[in-house]
Each structure stands twice: as C-alpha cells, then as structure tokens.
Length: 271
Image (cartoon, rainbow, N blue to C red):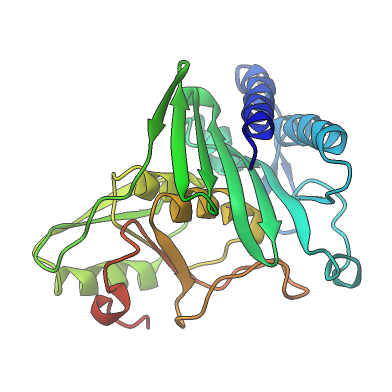
C-alpha cells in the first residue's frame, strides 16, 4: 500500500470514529436486525462516511460493507480485489458503553486480506497492517509504533484473549484443556476486533474463536495480525479465506501472536 493512500485511510477511519463518538455521547436508540444483532445510527453514519470516501479514493475497487446492500455471490465471485468494511464492529460493546468497539477497513486480494486499518475511537488509536510489506503499526497522538507479537515457548505462561460477549461451554472446556498443557493460563476478555490487535501488539498469545463471526468482523485485524508476525487459521487446519462461498460466515478459528511457534503440535483438539 502506498504511503499516501495509507494516510488517507487512517484519516478516513478517524473521521468515521469521530462520527461514532458523536452518537456515543447521546441517548441513541438501538434497532435489532434480522440476525438478532443490534444496529445503531452510529453503524450507519460510519458506513456512509467510509462508503462515500472509498468511492472517491478508489472508484475501481468494489466495496462490501456489513451495512450495505450485500451483493449476491454470483456478482462478487468475480471480484479479485475489493474493500471489506465493518463500520462499527462490537455494536454490543458500543451499546454497553465499554469503549471496546472498532472501525474496520480491509483490502482483500485473491481471497486474502493484504491490508487492514482498525480504528479504536474511544482510545484514539489506529492500527494498520501491510501484509506484503510485513509491517504493522499503531498510531497514537501523532506517534507511530511498530507492532510485533511476542515469542511463545513450551514452558511459558499462556495469555488467552476471548470474547467479552460470546463464549459458552465449549470455550470454557477448551481453556481448561489449555491449562493442562501450559504452566499457567490467564484470560483477557475483550470485545470486537480488538482481540486480534492485542495479539499483534504483544499483549496476548492465543485467541480461540469457538463461535460464529462474519468475514467483515475480522478481515482488517486479520491483516494487522499477519503483518505483525501472527497467524490465523480455521480449527480444521485449513487457511481462512474470504469471498469464496455464498455465506459470509467464517469457520471457527485460532489466531496467534507468534506465527513461528508450532501451535498445531501443541493445541488440544476442539470438541
């Protein structure tokens, strides 16, 4: 990604975040979508800003946003390159006012995220990840910090990051199983795509996602994580790819901070 477009995308995510925060500070209403997920005017305001500006910046690249009219698979299966956007990931966290929600823009190329921008409006942070360059950064107050996941070893304590809003008995059983393999296992609950960013910045080791997500939920942070040296794969061991089927639902997956550690040899099977 060239430096000028990267700068424009960071500013775009910040503007969308500002629009979200304006609504965050009001007594906003909450609607329920057909899939029982919440929707607010903040989701729609961020979508409108992002869609309009991406159309100006890169009119040749199609856009797929959670809040747009979703194109049919017959239309989008011919796309080799497109923007995949979640204008407000973590709407439940937004409604609960805990600040753990994000703005997400990913560039997908040949079914893989190659560039991602993740904004955290409440914290004034923007994460970027350029997979081709192998570079991930966190921007804060005009400064830029290089990101990299921390190294993992067999005898180290394991920090697991997990969803604040989605869990269940299978996840609890899996974390218990991890406790039998590592000397210490601690758990950090976090909402939205921030979980993947925590891995990218070296504050956690493993994110087992044993539950549903959609492609737009994770694509931008997926790029940040991989650019920082991490990895993400489906629980059956296959690569997690995008726009390869009619459904937008992802398989369950593992995400890790240290992509060089032989996780597949050490992780217990998923029930």
